[in-house]
Image (tube, rainbow over all chains, first blue to last red; front, top):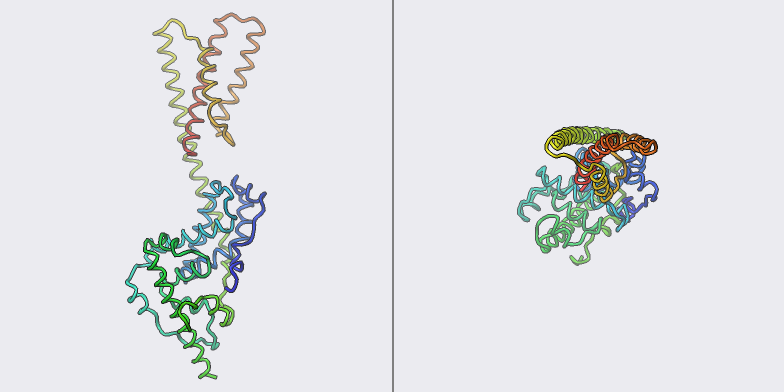
Length: 190
Length: 155
C-alpha cells in the first residue's frame, strides 16, 4: 500500500502480447491476467471491502477488457487503461448493486463502528479502510491510492468536487482517529 | 495534526503491513476464460445466423429480380453490372478475416473467374458468356451484402 507501483498496474505488457490479445488470442489474455490479475483483485477488494464481491468485479473487469481491448489505442500505458476500466466498472457495478447508497454525509459517518481489538493486537491500513462506509472508502482508495482527481471523482459519483473533498477530509480524519484509538488499545493490552 | 497534512500513505507507513491476502482465488482465471468463450460462441452463432439469413434473402431477391428482369427487359449487360458491383466491393474496407459465408462466395467467384477465362480463351459466343457474367453479378451482390453487414456490425 506504500507505493502506487505496488498495485501492479504500473507493470508493462509487451507489444506482441497486446497485439495477440487484440486479435482475441486466449493465451495472450491469460498472460494479461497473470500480469494484472492480482492488482485488479486488490483494487476491487479495497473498493468493495468483500472478497466475494471483489471476485465478481475482477470477473466483470476482465470480460469487459477482453471485449474492448481492440479499442485500446495505446494513448496511455495499458496498465493505466485497465486500472481505469476496473475502477470505473467497480464503482458503476457497486452503485447498481446498491452497495454505494447515497446516504447523507452525517449518516454515512455515523455508520462507522468503533474499531474492535485485533486478535494479534495489530491494525493494518486495509482493516482500517474496511471500517469506512463504502462510498467514503471508495473515495479514499481512488484519490489516495489510484490518483483520481476530485474532478474525476465528482464525475464518477455524480456529485460536486466539494462533496468528494469533504468526504475525503472526514474519512482521513476518521482513519487517523481509528488508528490512534487502536494503538492506545494495543498499549493498554501490553 | 493539521487536517491538510492527513493522507493515507503517511498513515499506512506507520501501521503494520496488511495481513490480508490480496491473491485472487486460483480458479478465477479459468472461470473468466470459460465465460468469455461461451459469450464469444454465442455472439458468433448469432452473427452467422444473421449473415446466413441475409445471404439467403439476397440470393432469393437476386434470383427473383433476375427472373423478373429476364421477363421484363430484353437484355441486361451482366458484364457491366458485375464490374460496377466489383467497384462497390473494392470501396469497402477489407475485413481482417472473412466470414465463413463470405469465404464461400469468394471461392465460388474464383471458380467462376476460371470458367470465364476458359470461355474467352476458346472464343465462346455471348450466349455462353452471358450466364457466367450473370452468375458473377449475383455472387458479387451477395458478397457485397455480407461485407456491408459485417462492416456496419463492427461500427
